[in-house]
Image: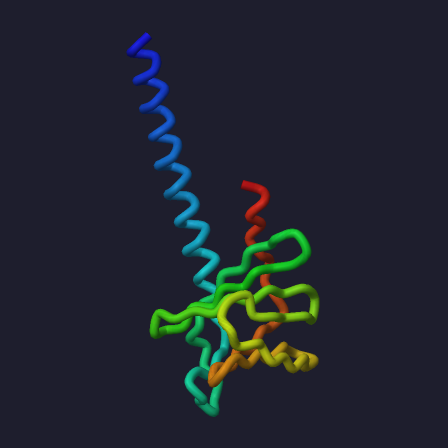
Length: 122
């Protein structure tokens, strides 16, 4: 009986390790998408922010990673975009080619989304 429990524990640990590696690969692939942003009051946009998209019931969660290590999280439902963290609300301007979101001195240009990662299908 001890061997069966030990074998089961080893198999469970191996499966967890494989799952963690594939989750990390999925997150890295999702974060490889770049987005134009103008940070700290910059006048011009540059494609230096990385984006993670996760589908949730009712919309999408965007996590935008800035080059300095900071990040912003947004909830997106159609053209509605709102801050999902922090005290500052998002100011949103919808344009024909993209949606511009401003929080504080940072601006982000959200283009039509790439196919998102569906977190419910794992």
